[in-house]
Figure 1: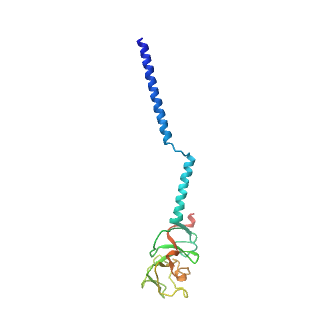
Figure 2: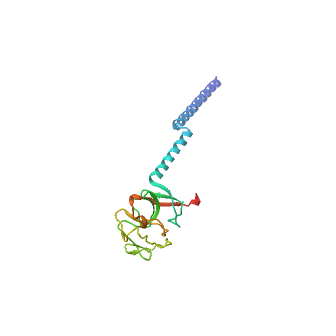
Figure 3: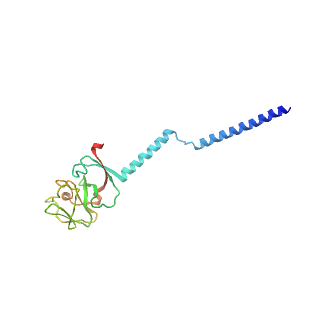
Length: 199
């Protein structure tokens, strides 16, 4: 009789243990299902891809621009067909900033040499003079000749006007040719140059 009671007790205990394990297993299963994403892996991938595309579109649509150097006017620092990335959101530009701008429907790359309020002159010795001071330009390898018949010197820059020159000064089209450049004509400041042979 005692043996029967032991067997029954053991069976009840085992049944209770199995029941607890089943409940814990179902609980874990419910938690997994509760935290499981409603999207499939493919949907998650497409969603992430859409986010990346939107970020790139916003970045290159409103913050960063890209342009190809149209010629060798900025040689040797920038050469024809180099890919330039420029920052669109600058409110003002400083002397020596390299910028991309559109003048008379044509895209140019140039270096700001004078800003609003500055006076610009070019000496008979083909030296650039800003505010009555000769400018030292160690990175420029050629003289800065005047283009006769285009600009009258000295030039006093008004509000939001810039005097922009190319680095290859002989024969380049810049402010000596088409005059000052306004803030609205500047697309942005060049921040990165990607050489054409690197593409």
